[in-house]
Length: 83
Image 1 (tube, rainbow, N blue to C red):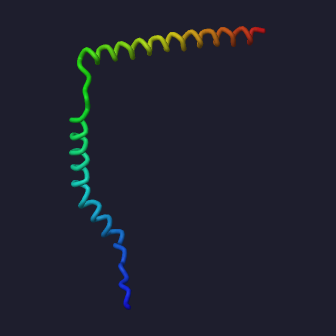
Image 2 (cartoon, one colour):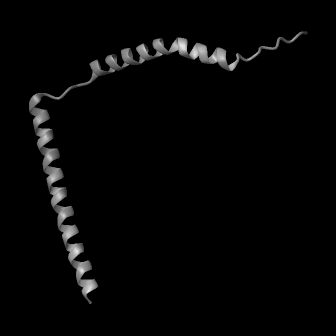
Image 3 (tube, rainbow, N blue to C red):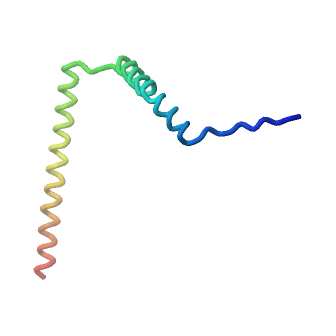
């Protein structure tokens, strides 16, 4: 029984094959991306505006909270240093 040895392709052969296959892989990626974007349930204009207002409001509230905490901690540190 004779066993056939299968040689692994060399580095340059694998690199050439990778480069040759690259455009096909890139085009497949874009085709898949377009197909997935067609499946997306896009929000209506009204929903988008409502979601944006909620996000902006949440950011403003958090900014105020962080600002108050920063001011309070700064005041506290100044008072401790003044001791």
